[in-house]
Image (cartoon, rainbow, N blue to C red):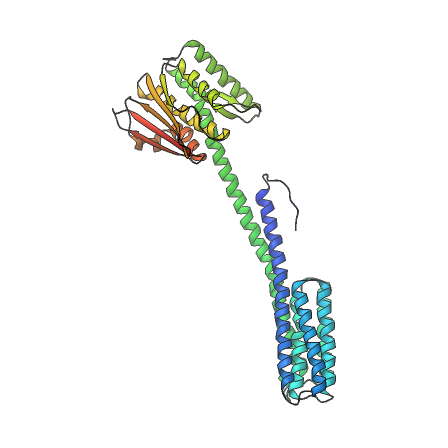
Length: 408
């Protein structure tokens, strides 16, 4: 089986080739197990035929059954250890078994003894036809095996009747034909199945890349919305409610972000207007909240914080939660028409919850789905990405409450 390391962009391709390898192994095992089944059929048929009175003498019968038992054991080996040597072992033991039964049956074997010889030659030995059709070397061994078993059965006079259809060459050849056709069918099916697996893998890879591209587009939309567009919105409203120093700091942050994006860096957002583009130590919750509080301290919106300051989320999920919460507060500042908002944080050990409430103009929550890219991506999608939910309670003239819940 192919050896692959890592878990990168080639993961779907690696899994595709592993699937093909596993299928090839299972196909080989199936062929050898079917060879064992065909072989057991020949051994059992020969054993039953030799039980018919007059087939062989009593003393010779013991030797016949010993060689049949040895042939059955070789078929157990070929199924357990699928290898070329196992195939040769079955062939060699089968020839010995044929010679033993032929000698015991005498120069003119009875119909029952002839049937036993045919079952051994056509099925007991012929079972290896199921595994001798993959390479030219195997095909040469197959032709040689068919020729020798047919010749031996013919020389032993193993004709069951006077009709041509009951002659030893025809009956032995029929057994080999059945097992060989099965092996050929299984071998020819392998390329078709592998092509199908390859096409499925390629389709999956295309769909995955499309999904990744769509997810990246949404992340880019969130980034743009939370930075440059937020600054442009403030400029469009002449910076109302925001002092000059805060405006300059936010504009400088956006300028630095856009420059570094143009240079090819991949940003990791920490808070709206402040992005980490290189490796830094993880921020503590208190520092994150303080950064949020500092952002709105000079924005014309007074934010009252309530509840616990300790939220038990891992850093990446905590950052996403705080970013979504920050966008909710930003929406109050932009759209609610009030100068005060309340934020309540809680952690009950199972769910981390953030509630943002204002007494502003309110809106119809049904209008969010079709018109608010910022709320859809920066709040709802961001919270859903970390397994959370968002609930909005509002009505025109009745204020707004947004509840963010993230399970721990």
